[in-house]
Length: 260
Length: 326
Figure 1 (cartoon, helix red, strand yellow):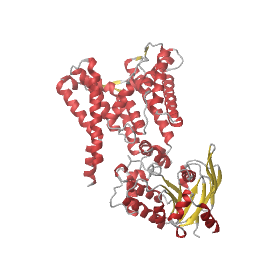
Figure 2 (cartoon, one colour):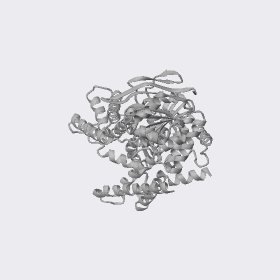
Figure 3 (spheres, chains in turn blue, green):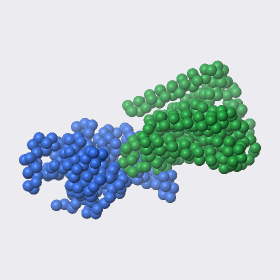
Figure 4 (cartoon, helix red, strand yellow):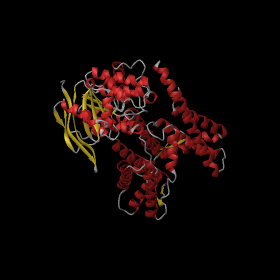
């Protein structure tokens, strides 16, 4: 197997009496695209939020490259190389592409001035242009353009390139193709493949099983706060996965999964 | 090519259209009444301008971060009242009393900010309640009577309300405060790391938080800043007219917000412009002054002010639509 980048062990999280995450464990390998599937309320977003530092888990351990880590804030997650891209909420529309790319990690002069330090605008723009060029979207986009002037697909691409920029080990994509047109969706999926080719690992959360089969290496299915199936894409098919998600015919599949 | 592009975006920017309208307004007033541009009248306008303008600078930053503050007018009234009471009762020297007044403003701003961010009540409701509390406090501690302000010359009086002549113009030191604070605000919003955070928070708070921006702390600091600037403006005003009234600043909150949005800052956050606010402050001040000079009946002032503000907002909205289409 490829080298392990992220490992979750027995993660548990409750909100009051609701056990949103009962016992989740899985491993993400280097350069691997893993799709996390499940119906609404299956615990996908709870799992994502725990990994990206939105809230701490009640129990369980997270390992990054074999090292046990504690993730208490989004900043912690970012510092560990875990970048999360939420649907529609990753960019500030009134800021330029360049300012968005470096939001929270702005290059500055006179660092000792803290939050009052002046932005290094030249470096900001150059780095942004270089990044846009590297990910192949420089032809269309100007680093000074406001994000509000971009299409949904372009915004997703910008958000993903930002995650790549900071050499993220793990990029979590939360419903990246929601509200996108057909062509834009293909653009984003192509981008996910490029991200994998560049050596990043991707955890892809989506409702759309078709997209999963186009880009993912492995599929993890969650139901009611638990991981109920884990299969490589090559070993399964669309109908099977669909029935696992809805719980229509679990027994045979679970047996198959356990046999492995 | 980039120069041309940036040039045209400047022309289409909201602060630019506000500036054009300001120039037109000034021209109309100047033609209608020759006294409008007289040294005395300009000196008068420049005496009033900084007092609301200073508050508007803080309000611009706060609005850009997506919040606003309705308690500024009341703070404008309370801060100098507290200072004068402390001095008159012999409890503090003037310097210590001024410091105490500003600390009170810090506390008011902090309470606003903490309730808005940590409890999650909208800034409209929180600062509206604070307006009543603060105004009520000012009325109660003075029993409703204006206090005679500190009128002995000294360092602090000169610092806040000293005046000087340039030719036949008479300016107050408050103008320097306004100029200095404006430059600082422009720097923060456009060039500093903090400004990037402020715009990002107002534009999409979740995105900013996801990037590790301490959104709540930034907002609380901006509430404090706005409150402190309102208190400072109140002290400047009280020193200038040598009286601290518990009802001073009534209605200023709306006038200040009008200045800010007329300048092109979005009420919904994310887009703020200090230059626009300066233009907005000049515009509202010259309207108030100009319509008196051209003989609009006193009771009709607000009709004109309201209509002009509405016209400005419609213009901004249309420009915004055009920009979105282009």
